[in-house]
Image 1 (tube, rainbow, N blue to C red):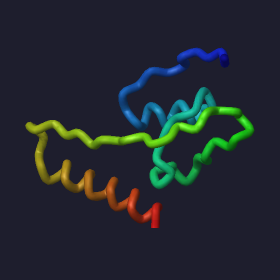
Image 2 (tube, rainbow, N blue to C red):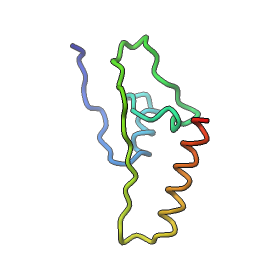
Image 3 (tube, one colour):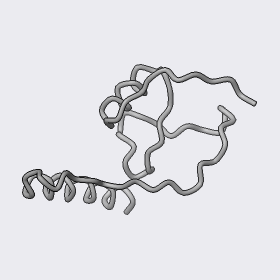
Length: 84
């Protein structure tokens, strides 16, 4: 029952973050991965609860393995450290 429109379409997380930081929308992130300069949306907006959301890390099998593993480790370490 709420009107809405697509203001941005991006496949990259940095594009999503840029749009949110510009104030043109909201994004879904696990609490543990919300950047420090952004805040969790409160109930004052009347948005429904999302429930569980799964995020998946995918890598290109032909990409160099070492950088992919380093990035994966960094992402997972940040998620775990912010939950604790």
